[in-house]
Length: 161
Image (cartoon, rainbow, N blue to C red; front, side, top):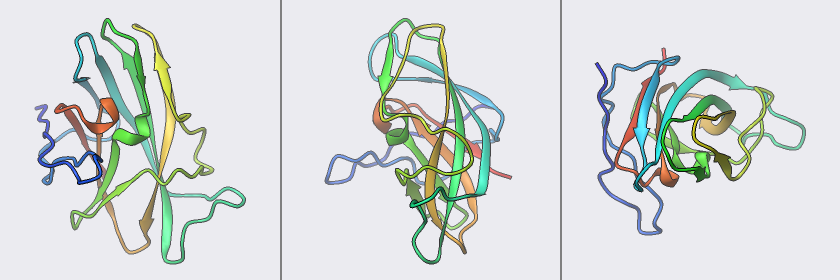
């Protein structure tokens, strides 16, 4: 039931590249248990909802021909180590053609975004949005998330209805 994909390549600028093909039957609302690259790093990650389109806040509009899509993540630290990372670095949305989009660093009206760095002690939870800028013609089909700014080999994947 739970299938994960692993990174295939890393970009020349050391930006993580997530797996190429969707291979999961997990969907929005499901919780996946993911591990990081260091001992004791473990999160239960839930894609709570996808807001598409997400409204723009004042002074933060998408480029012409684009829209904002916001994904709300719930991160629960189920490991023994403190989680201290930038969740937006490990999140990607993928459209039905396979085009990938990373965090736009914008806020939307969907709700509060994660701060730049999030610290979660074992047993604790954090909730926040990550916003992506996507062409109006694209349909978001998949959300991916990996710990350690996307460098973990354990990549969660959720299908968007």
